[in-house]
Image (cartoon, rainbow, N blue to C red; front, side, top):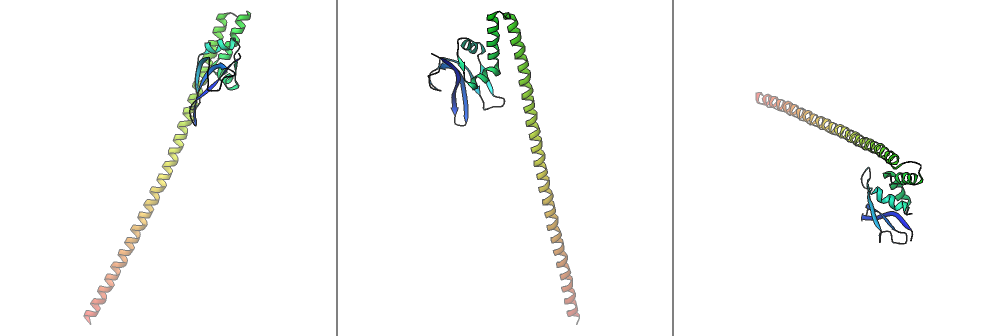
Length: 182
């Protein structure tokens, strides 16, 4: 029986959520599995991956073959590195303490890179929000200016109409006075 480490799809249409499982290669994609090793949620940025690294290493040591996507996830979380280090310890190339120290150093470096990515994403989002706010503010100012201009034009028209009306009144009064004088 050959064992594969692969993704098992869950979630709804357009919102996938995956379980990382060790399963018989002949089993259906979402069918029976031997052990659930972790989860993978690609719907957020950065993606959330929860993985039992030791369980994955045990399956890799037992001969399980990861699929391409599962291999990428295992590499991202350090399971492939730990598998490599365990092989080195078994061959006598390094001690268990050295392997643990290398793995711990790699984990710290990885945590720093992930934190930097999150900071970069939050800065990008803040910059996008600031740009959108500035654009919206410019549009609002343009609207306000247009409204003021329209109000000024309406007031000028009313003033001109009042002037014309008052001139007509004066003219009609003068005309009536002239006719009454005659």
